[in-house]
Image (cartoon, rainbow, N blue to C red; front, side, top):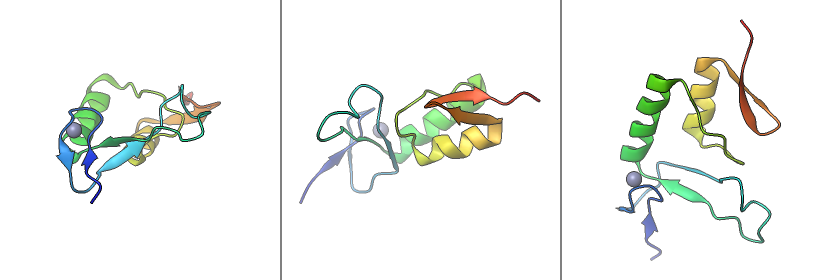
Length: 85
Ligand SMILES: [Zn+2]
């Protein structure tokens, strides 16, 4: 069985909570998909809620899409842009 590891904390995880593909390797033959465990997802959600900043990834994680919508961000050319209110 393939053991999955969280890219952030390095813990082995049975089920990935979420995943994303960072800029910088999406042109590789096999893009390195970053997995995240639930704990790191929760921490990141908290950080984003606190700071209002979302890191831009080539392929954002599901929770990043959700938060972006919640916080009024739009994806423009791969970057999160705040919509003018
Ligand atoms: Zn983790």
